[in-house]
Length: 211
Image (cartoon, rainbow, N blue to C red; front, side, top):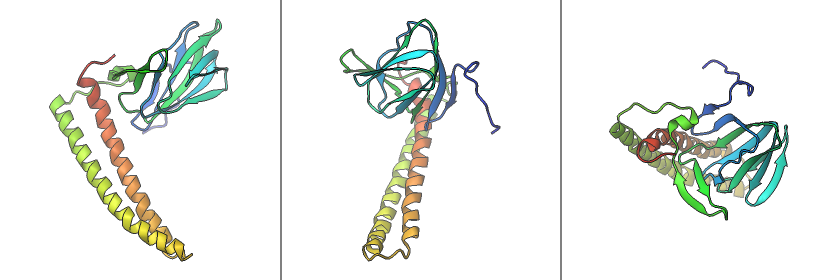
């Protein structure tokens, strides 16, 4: 794929969306207050480019100016408000990006019903694959992920035992190989899980209410 360059002066949208990460430029007008919410699986990073914003994250408050950033970690309720008379522009990213991406929060931080978003909310086209095929694809990927994880666990058990024995005897013979075995099991598992998550992000918005 060709190298893409994005400019926050022009690209006020989601600029890259994958199960691993969603990143975008966002512009908010003076007086705007976003809904309080959290992310069940994702950390969210905010970097202010223009203007000022008030962030409330897990009950703590800070005002950020251009060049400053903050992080809302997994399951931390957060809310952003624009401060002053100038519009605020920021870069944000959520990682991983897996539906439902937003869990709304009440004034006391209590969890409200989860919210699945339409693909268009993330500047993505809705899948045109028949829904039954989408479901079958997801189930197949879930079964494949389970099989890969089981194999990885068995390999890790054997490699881990060999690694423990070698390290216990203060020997480094073969330790690199055992570490590689454990790593490739982890790699294959994550690779398949992200493939499964990509399919889930296509399927979920089509199977119920979004908003």
